[in-house]
Image (cartoon, rainbow, N blue to C red; front, side, top):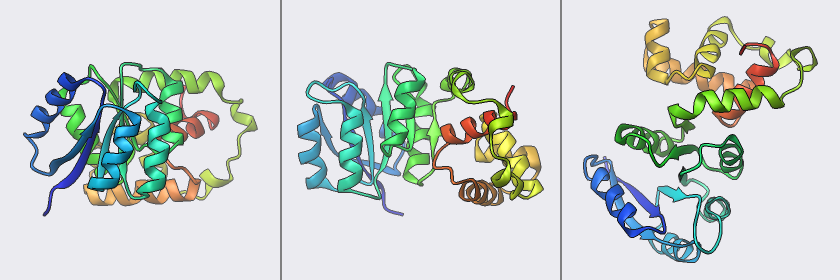
Length: 218
């Protein structure tokens, strides 16, 4: 299977070198280009046509979030993993809103970086596990009362899809969901995709928000 073409965008050359050293451990990715600014990233993306992009939010000329929006318009199938020093829910929500599939903090473990890239390369949403508590609390504070939320979409879910949903909003991966329910990973992925379509959700943050409205999260 050919390697996924990866674009790295960060304004610190040493950080980019560190990322490339980590990525050499995984043959499923090949660094096709790198850039240190918004403008350079657009030029490089046009030239190398990446499958996956690892984008820093803080760039010297414009925001990485703006860059993510532009890249998604240029390459609709591009999987984007945002990287930032900031673990704030506002940044995460905005990044996902413009088309990023994942969000990673710069102090994350190496395994988290690779897990995030693999997920977004497969078109799956992914959040750094260290963000889950903060995001849940922030979304809980922002959402309306549960009795104001519509239950109609939730009622359309099968009992198994509801089980999968509860585990997903608790932060479990597809593999962990499969283990908890004693089903295959492929079946877990199928149920997750089905419930997301029925609920009209695009990413994990939206699913957490909806679950909070329904009172599924304390």
